[in-house]
Length: 169
Image (cartoon, rainbow, N blue to C red; front, side, top):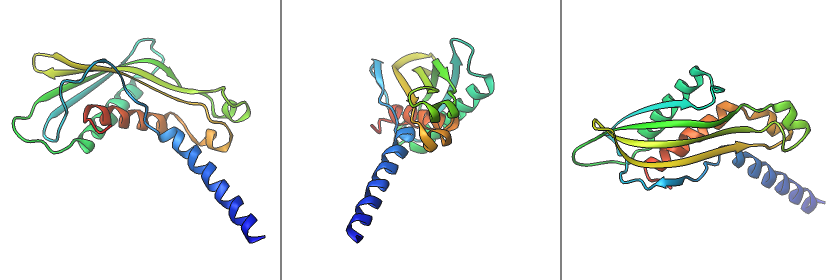
């Protein structure tokens, strides 16, 4: 009886960990132009977020830009020598807030999407030094699906951008 309870508890824990990793797992970058630089501590970083279709509110664009800049500053490895200035231009190509209730009732519907193209420019001459695509989607149902929102996905997206430009992946 104890073995059966232990196995059931372990299975529940394994499923919970698998579900929890879905929303916080950072997507891999698809490079359009390889990164020629690595952003390090001391480099100046400015992030701008724009959207193609106007679905993402301006306040969320600013919030995502701020999150990306903060994550880059936090994750940047130590650097030496002359520090540089960079602009991260993020163009959101797909933005969908999804619907937690719909996601809970019918798995695979009510999805959250945050897709975009990140272009890295070295300033002040604005020379393109890299470009990549990041797509983050979430469609998990159940109670976990209700608890995940665009805020969670934005944090994960910002983390993915920072890990990519700081070469942590």
